Length: 316
Image (tube, rainbow, N blue to C red):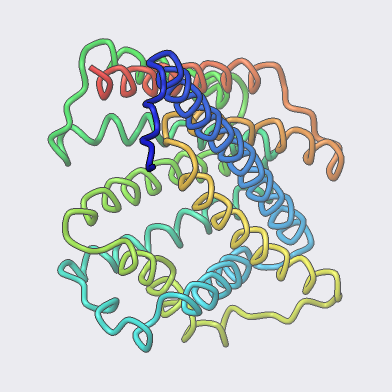
């Protein structure tokens, strides 16, 4: 005679659901930790890229050539996965002009950074670059309609005060390369704003396809006039390393964002300062001055405050 299974006791059902919930929470926690580790790895590669670029610039290799190699490799790598053969629609942009301007801004930002690295410590350049998110927050009001509160504007003002602490205008001579870093911050801020604006018109694949294309296309015809063959094999190795570190850094960045929310990952971007200080000391004997450290802490603190405000606003 057939028998029917008796239902599980309520206590067993609750225990099972709790176990499932605990397992899912543990999985999510592990994914976040992996994402954080990947983010830390990405900024370590970016710091290594800067170290290679600084070494090349000090050896006399034109920073524009280094920038070209950086993005030529990036375009080649991206084209393996995102190209018109596999996805014909990827070249169709609803805002082609903006895509070209965005690509040129990124190329210019990298070139400004590489030139500045020839004269300044890595810790100085990255500390000033940390002001880019503050500049984006300031410009997002008039350009995107994302106006900041008075508290956020005050935090942005404090962040820019941190940049002044690093640069110290009026206290001795300011190296002209510092102005290149400031220019880099402004150029990169416009790049970030255009990237956000393009999200409403083009797919991520289309934006990735055009990211380095315009800069490389613009510079390619000029190479015969600016190109000079590196005289040592180590220079070739460093040029390849620049391309490799840049590609690996962005790859880890994508993997990190696939595993953890941006607000979880963002604070770990600032670990790049630790890598920059370490590599700067080991490779060039550079130690940042106290005002560079103080200014960097002010800029980082302001950036973390803005991040916390954004997180609270999203969760509200």
